[in-house]
Length: 381
Ligand SMILES: Cc1cc2nc3c(=O)[nH]c(=O)nc-3n(C[C@H](O)[C@H](O)[C@H](O)COP(=O)(O)OP(=O)(O)OC[C@H]3O[C@@H](n4cnc5c(N)ncnc54)[C@H](O)[C@@H]3O)c2cc1C
Image (cartoon, rainbow, N blue to C red):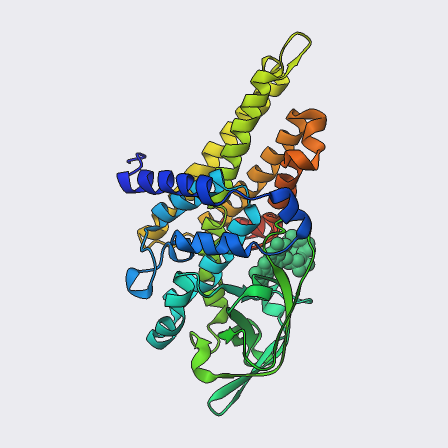
């Protein structure tokens, strides 16, 4: 077993950190208060090739392996504090761009991937509905075949990038009586008549990412925009969620390291009762727990990337990664507030924003409870 990073992995992480330090530093107190998508940040990420990190060069991507992609994302997360922007990138990569590469016809790949991989187009996916959250098979959006078209009808909620996206992977049922076997995926473009992308909904954190609702009202799309076979939607969704759950939190590894280093500095500098607070075991042990969470999260996430790179199935590992990294990120950001005392509570120190951003990760891509359920099932429970 070889745990050493390859030169490519090291190089890409160093390059991502350097790029983010130079081009991805924003006034996040203001952007967070405004709560709008960081369009300028997106353009800069695209100029770095991030919108197509794992996509082959022939489709306009950077053709990085999954572990090099994860290294690059970790590097971005370390030096760019805009968690919302990197979340938007994750949704674009794992829930739209990669699924088109994996399941699209050659014509669909030619049509969408070059724009998506270069960041000229933005992608997302729409599964969740007002009445169907964790229980995705309960969705109500219908797709009715009419000649060479499908007519989509329904409502979607929590669509990351929805208000700013150009193309979305939308899930609907071709036959509600077939239950989960009716689920089918479609590629829907922004300008499609009948698609109404509603305003971004205000939210607790990740405010520089745009999350919105959408309505499909007699939305007619060409039958050639079906992604995969009729009835294959649940399998397709599970496979794209495997990648999303395993990799969407790669930037959070960088965020956790950034927070931990800041806390170490504070613990060394802040004096109380005549000594640095890092000398109190209650503080130093918090820092050790941060380090432990970071290293275990890293080990799990990179092992997942390696498994997928080998072409192995890693559904259960993906759930474990998602569960552990999200819970670790939340705990580390909460501990950082506590370690900074009153200062941690102030907006201007940006530690409270980190807590708000991290909390979202327990919900999107399947809640922590759902991940535990999936792991329990894989254990025969
Ligand atoms: C920031 C953000 C971005 C998102 N982006 C997208 C997106 O791009 N596309 C998209 O389709 N969706 C997206 N979502 C939606 C997300 O996937 C859902 O919120 C999530 O799946 C949970 O569904 P729900 O909110 O309806 O909660 P519910 O399913 O109603 O769950 C409510 C509570 O019950 C618990 N629960 C439900 N079922 C079980 C069970 N079987 N066992 C134990 N506990 C259970 C849940 O864990 C939760 O605590 C996003 C959500 C957020 C917060």
